[in-house]
Length: 64
Image 1 (cartoon, rainbow, N blue to C red):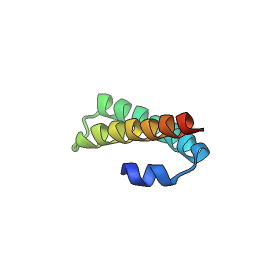
Image 2 (cartoon, rainbow, N blue to C red):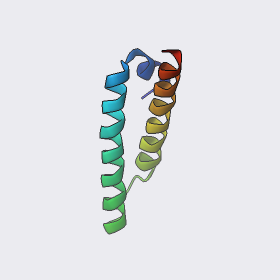
Image 3 (cartoon, rainbow, N blue to C red):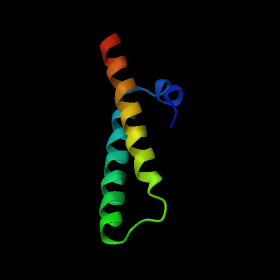
Image 4 (tube, helix red, strand yellow):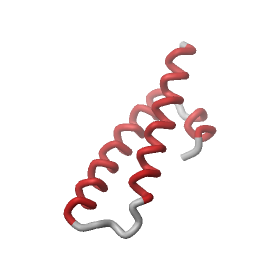
């Protein structure tokens, strides 16, 4: 997800999406621990997406 896409979302949608992505990241990490994933860059990409969404969420909350 790009920052521009996150900026178009509402605060509630961002919070929901962050929670879903965090759960997805935890699942991916657990699966990778048990059996190594072929493409480990997905874990890093998900982590960066969460950070991007959290940054946009903080900016939106600061504006209000």
